[in-house]
Length: 180
Image (cartoon, rainbow, N blue to C red; front, side, top):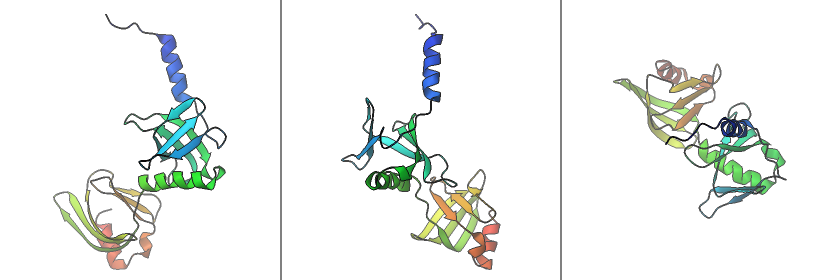
């Protein structure tokens, strides 16, 4: 027999999902786990592993940080309005998790970009060393964050940034223009 529809329960669950809870140093205790992850204790609730996600990664990287459950279908536990309000050791722990999530090497030189069968093959120098990666020419592989700032996502969802295309040589800009 099918479970009966319970409107009251559905409304409660919806309200709980839409409720915004701010996490502060007084209401949230973060700790590093043995595996290098972050756990959270808030009130009576305990989360052995949480995800740390920027809500505005480009415009407000230190503000409005979402803390979420670690499951694939994660749900938001709460929001840190400003990382600066937390003690240094907690802030560093959360920033470490953010660095892992938002690892984005900066492209400093373009050696070659080759186009074959709808894919572009990049050979570049980054602030982390020389790198080769591939992007799919269709879709949203290249995002213009401003008139001069570009974010490139490869086929493995790794991100690369060019903070200012005008700082590249004219030859590098021409190579890049063919793929933008």
